Length: 178
Image (tube, rainbow, N blue to C red; front, side, top):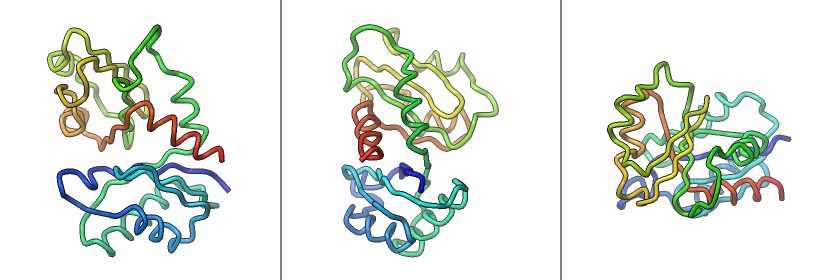
């Protein structure tokens, strides 16, 4: 069985698309997934499955959520090794405030990265590094004050995106190992 992390986009934000984590855990178990665990209210689920096809897993989860709750929730999935690689490859060197580090997970490789447009949105202190399936961001002023939010990145890159802070990425990896 493979350990996976699913990242749900846009649930439990400002009273929208409310899903209780205990219910989400039960939903995943009803899909036949094993060792299901949730982490915080923002839609992080660790589970195990024999299904090797990530797109099939995503389709099953998105459809089950739509059937049960009546709204669409974009889902992304990474396996344990991919999360480990993201952690190991952190491009920022030196001392960093962990609560200012973020990873934005992309549903696919963007057809084009409009670097000039994205540079205009950054503050001089912001750092951003693009990889094939994700983006590393260091936002010293915090994500709440950044113009590099999920919606903006999705519009500019023309792919689905969902972000997690560095502590959450590391916690999800630890949960996968257990």
